[in-house]
Amino acid sequence: MPQDGRVPSNPAASSAVTVVPELLTRLRADLAASDFTVDRLSSADAWGRTAGAALFRGERVAARRALVRSAAAHDRNRASSTLAMLFVLGYPQPIDDVAAALPTLGVEGARRLGLIGVDGAEVHARVDLRPYSFVDDAGEASWWIASDLGELALGGALREDHVLGVGGASATLAGLMIPRRVERALDLGTGCGIQAMHVARHARHVVATDISERALDFARFNAALNLIDGIEFRLGSLFEPVAGETFDHVVSNPPFVITPRVDGVPEYEYRDGGMEGDALVASVVRQVGAHLTAGGVAQLLGNWETGGAGAAGGKRGAYSVGDWVAQGDVPLDVWVVEREIQDPAAYAETWIRDGGTRPGTDDFERLYDAWLGDFEHRGVVEVGFGYVTLRRPEGETATPIVRIERLLGALGSNDVGLGAHLGTTLDAMAAVRELDDDALLAATSTVAGDVTEERHYWPGNDDPTVISLRQGGGFARTIESGTALSALVGASDGELTAGAIVAALAQLLGADENALRAEVAPRLRELVTVGMLRL
Image (cartoon, rainbow, N blue to C red; front, side, top):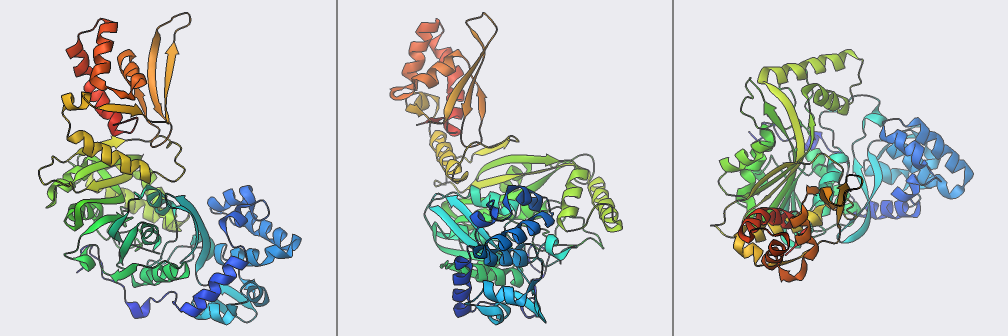
């Protein structure tokens, strides 16, 4: 039995799309020639901001009307409008329009690839195919991503072996990816392949696994369509396909959704791990250390429960991640950033709707009751969501770092995602781990370019009542400061050591130097760790 309690899907019964290199070359040419891009569709010349916002809310009528107007106004827009109506919105299209939009591939070629079905003079989409663009540390890129049709196109609940496209969690994890060059990387639970494709931009060889052969079909298709090499696809549950192997970088958007394990509740392969509560995420966290090289990093998203008096009693929310790592065989540095918390009712509503079941229906009420009953039975009072970053220390004797924090506010300005910031933070954690307070104060540092200071005064008072240091990038942290700490930060120009600055401040303020060193050292350590000061 696979590690997550589910049986891998039957390859013969679940084929989705087909990789035919010659036909993919033709499809690629047609998509490019039609200007089927994110910029085109989001422009005022296509569905624009208003209809795009409606589409984000799950309503497609405004986008359809905008595309019809666009195609009627300019012949150059007809091909992209037809493709968007067919593959994104899920409206059947006249066969002649599809043939005109795919002149090199042709309708028959699209059918052979598994993209469409033909009913007389009408074509319907069998998959969702849409443009995707992003900017990361390597620069700008644009791809086309195929997946199963969503609720919007289907008009109802999803199939349980549904293969998700680029959703919010996928985009989040892609933006968190630390962009360091590595030899080997693993995408655990690849789905449509989006994380494997991202990590291939900085890894020489990528292994992408999934329990679903249908998902692997889409992942192979997407990698081939976008000319991405170096990815090896393997079928299996969790770490079974990579037993005994280690990697420099592991990424995973695992099926972390907490779903009642009772009859009548759908189990969607893309989000439900087949285990009770948060056990799937716990299993990944416990096992991943054995698959990391020295210095290797694992990054994943997850949910975790906080338990009250029931069977979940003792579950400590985000702090459980540190407990799970401690239960594994390999010591790891742990950094958890909790980004969202929900009560059981809000959590149930979110994921029932995600599966395509609409509020107000009998099915919604039945599922809602099952979710709340499960949480109540197990004593769960809160569910958290966030980012997990784990690293295997380079030295076997290094004391592991455990940092658990709740950062629910807006992120800072990060043009290429949070990945670079996460990487520098890990490096800073490793650097300050090796320094005691005296060594830290003997080092020099500089202020990061995105740090500003904010002061508040009572009217007519020359002395500030509140001094804050604000981070413009990263997690947009605000750290309450004081006269001495702000003066230290302001004088940190890379020339004087922190200890020398503290000594001068002690004389200026008439303070005891040793007491001021003891006061400043932990604050200095935190500022270096979060990237406001750089050693």
